[in-house]
Length: 437
Image 1: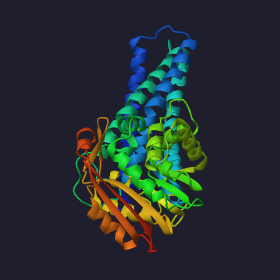
Image 2: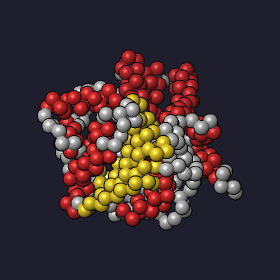
Image 3: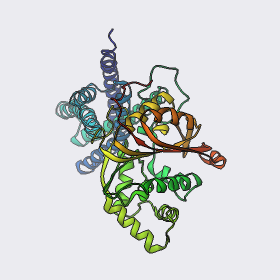
Image 4: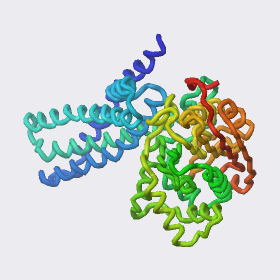
């Protein structure tokens, strides 16, 4: 069988099996609730309210299932829902953005699930008409129970899909033995947990990183365009470049960009970045008083332009395309997105291709790290060092500077014990390869 048909075949089989199991669980839950007599005698109004509440439960359980399905179809090309797979396929054929693909994939999934509701409503209406003793309230209770069963099924399906994804190799990797089990960014990443674990105070690795970026920013002209690639839910690497004309930020996960939007809007509950602003201003040799911090925050808010979704699995990972930015900063992103050094090298080339010829690339990475922790989850790292950065950057780098720093105290808390920092001018090169080398 052609490998191109395998995801479709797997999707077809999974859709049939999933539909059968969903119907079995939902019908059993609805019939069981009616037969139990727990809600016997409730009026039509109360039964309607129960049905509405059951849809809220179903919607809540559908969210992790949608996230898991998106991760599955992006990683493997297969899905547990054929309409969702078809929508994803058409969006890819149209070269849609990651956001559009995700919306299309979710719409196909939700549309199929809603369509499955029709037989239940028809069956409930028929039962009221044909069966003695079956009241409209009983029918509503049956439908609500079926929704609760569907919610339990969707949650279980999400957990099963996440378990499968955890055993698969990292995205965009050449065939090789599976790595140690890591959490999946699409389903396990918590922006708030990450901020709480790493950014309550300015830790030694970030002091070094900010100082390195402040030095790099001295050579950036005021009319420069800057991209912070793979920003996560953070803004601190934008502060050294606040004098630039515009600063765009991008990340794979919409939840990370939401945290950035909260800070830009000064919304209640937004993360407090003032310690990092003070550290940046101190590195610049200026007075980091309250007024200076407030000015830098205000200046950064005026400079931030677009918040974009990016995807390193795409040959051109962000919308504006190759050579679009005078400065690209990527800190702890490509090395923390994969456990495979060859895939990391591919990611680095794709990021470097976003820098305009003669522009500046600034990189920070974990040094010789195989994984890092966020809460109780462990995420991958490419286990690279300064020699790897030298090898990958040299073909397109001028004025390359690389620093390595040992940070043994970080290993106890976060799982890494050093960082490597690099910056260079990017010289024109040929088109990026589509596979790791």
